Amino acid sequence: MNIIIPIKQVPETSNVKMDKETGTMIREGVVSVINPLDLYAIEAGIQLKEQFGGKVTVFTMGPQAATKALKEAIAMGCDEGILISDRKFAGADTWATSYTLSEAIKHIGEYDLVIAGERATDGDTGQVGPGIAAWLDIPLATYVSKIDEVTKDSITVERLVEDGYQILQMPLPALLTVIKEISNPRLPTLRGKKKARVSEVPVMSAEDLKLEESYIGLKGSPTKVVKIGYPKVTRGGKIVKAAGDEGVNEAVEGLIKFLEAKELI
Amino acid sequence: MSYIWTIAEQSKGKLRDVSFELLSRGRKLADKMDTKLCSVLLGNNVTDETLQELIYRGADEVYYIEDARLENFIVETYSKVLSDLIKEYHPHSILAAATSSGRTLMPHVAIHVKTGLTADCTELDIEEGTNNLLQTRPAIGGNIMATIKTPDHRPQMATVRPKSSRPLPLDKSRVGKIIRVALKDELVDSRVKMVGFRKDVEEFVNIEEAEVVVSGGKGMKKQENFVLLRDLAKHFDGVLGASRDAVDRGWLPYPHQVGLSGKTVSPKLYICAGISGSIQHLAGIKTSEYIVAINQDPDANIFQLADFGIVGNLFEVIPKLNARLEAYKKEAK
Ligand SMILES: Cc1cc2nc3c(=O)[nH]c(=O)nc-3n(C[C@H](O)[C@H](O)[C@H](O)COP(=O)(O)OP(=O)(O)OC[C@H]3O[C@@H](n4cnc5c(N)ncnc54)[C@H](O)[C@@H]3O)c2cc1C
Ligand SMILES: Nc1ncnc2c1ncn2[C@@H]1O[C@H](COP(=O)(O)O)[C@@H](O)[C@H]1O
View 1 (cartoon, each protein chain N blue to C red):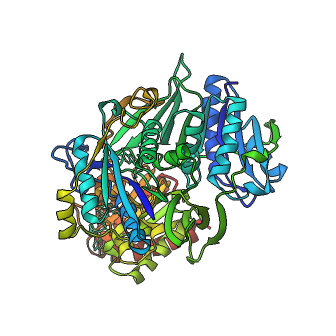
View 2 (cartoon, chains in turn red, yellow):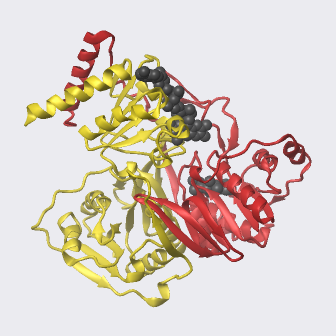
View 3 (cartoon, rainbow over the protein chains, first blue to last red):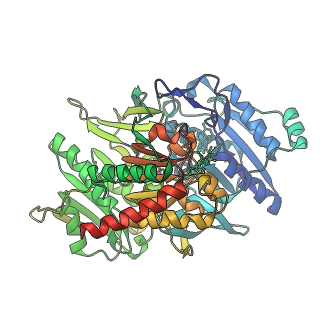
């Protein structure tokens, strides 16, 4: 079973601190990591390979530095990494990104399954996975929490929706976007790290992929960002102490008043 | 035709609330542009009476495509049907819900009709002069707000989170047109089949569409203690949420998880106890209207985002709060 996994490198948010004065995020010194939600896709892919054989290829569209993310994925157990990189890709929105990624997938070759993350934690749209499936015209299942069955030419998955889990069966090749429930990502092993260090990561440009220039980068993006604002994240609400019986009663009373004033009770 | 469209959602022939929330957003835009507001629904066995409610809640026209093969959401077919409709009617803008189906359908359609799509918009407006849709959305865990335009492509498409706007009141004096559109056979994609549905979790909740969410974190200490929060939630007809730590400990199943790797919620009221307010948790609650936090650590990050915070032991505060709410209900009667 050949599996292709598009991953994205994003700024790491776990160590991000808030500036208490301005209430904004301090982004200095923030390092880049594999989009944490893509780790579930990588783990799911590796498990399928372990079960059915085949190969897992990870790839990303990003700057040269994104090679690091690909090497991390190889250290976890993926077989190959490919970097899609070109100045012309800069400013791509989800439309242009999914076009570029779908062409890269065609270029990588024969595959049974594409597994994407549910969404990337920076752009936070979750649109690229479905977009790739639309470009490739292959069946799509989003929010996949479990793979029930895989046969030579079909897959059955569970998909988390508002009121339960849909069970969907579709022919291969197909594209899945997966959620945290699907897997528990492993850590890279020493052997994996060694392998990652020596593995070559080929780089492909727009020209290599023979992309339609008017479909890529900022120029190929229907959406344009016209304004960026930094909202204060602090709300400056009322904070009361509840110490001792008396204190607890007062705090509860205060909360009741608050709920009344806001018509919440 | 420069109409504003909303994508209504149904489940087993009944409209989901988010259909009406989208109409209240759409109504404002349509009025500003002095154009019509239309609601599109794909489904099966939806009665005229049900369709009429879309008009009472703000629509001028309803396009309804009925077929047994549209009963369940299958993205390929829904996408082809909607794309075909768009190519025929050329709407100005389309609003859909940021639900499991809306978030799947819209990016698929955006590729087919070659246009832009903006996810999870919190504000929508029409730009004077150009009639461009101004779409404002949070990104990077809510730490920035970006305003996005789709200047050269039509339609302009956006998704908005459930519960982020209120439905308009039912106005039975409103009149509108219901247009039944026949399903073209060639648009049905039969590759994907729904072979089952699982709902084995005893209290399966949809925290994204709840008005009130009551969440617990590691500070709840053990699973049994969630009964405190369950009681609290009952006073508000609310549902239970949890931090990742609580979910990872198995105290509540994953569909309850709030935050970066769980769900983003936008309830009217978010109450949390024993949650520190990590940046990943906050990312999922920023669009809540009111936030109430109970934590014993005065420096807990959660208090930065709280509209009302109680610094105290949750095991002392919540039982008293529950008793007080119980008494309050009796007084009100
Ligand atoms: C990639 C990534 C994704 C993540 N995604 C998510 C996500 O989606 N959702 C999420 O929630 N987290 C997420 N996390 C984890 C996050 O970083 C935190 O670890 C987690 O939110 C902490 O959960 P908590 O607040 O329940 O626990 P803690 O941080 O341990 O906080 C417990 C709090 O309870 C308080 N407390 C203890 N006892 C009492 C008492 N008796 N009365 C009152 N207060 C008490 C303590 O003061 C403390 O503040 C993610 C992390 C990463 C790296
Ligand atoms: N630049 C990229 N390179 C490779 N994969 C990507 C890229 N951007 C997004 N993806 C994939 O698409 C998923 C959804 O991303 P997004 O739509 O940006 O939230 C991610 O989890 C990745 O699997």
